Amino acid sequence: MALALVVRFDLPDAASAARFDRLAEEVVAAVAAHEPGTLVYATHAVDGAPLSRVFYEVYADDAAFRAHEEAPHVVEFHRRKDPLLAGEPEVRFLVPGPATGVPAR
Image (cartoon, rainbow, N blue to C red; front, top):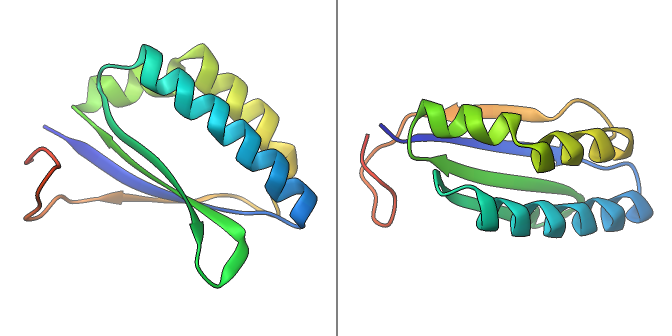
């Protein structure tokens, strides 16, 4: 069963946001190369909130999500991005509904 979530990150200033964006580029490339169970790993800037970022993530199942969280490139991403944040990220797990392009639950 697919598992989906969104994570919002708020950054304190433009320099932190730029560094966060570079880290995001690196982790997205590593996820694409090494995580077949990660079906969607999309990053977004928030319209009207230039210091906020949102990740939308879809995993094939719970095991794929656990593998993602334990992957060395993800652990390193968290280590490097944590000092850049203005506060704790907001994580929301989603209950899939009707969709196209996303596996059904």
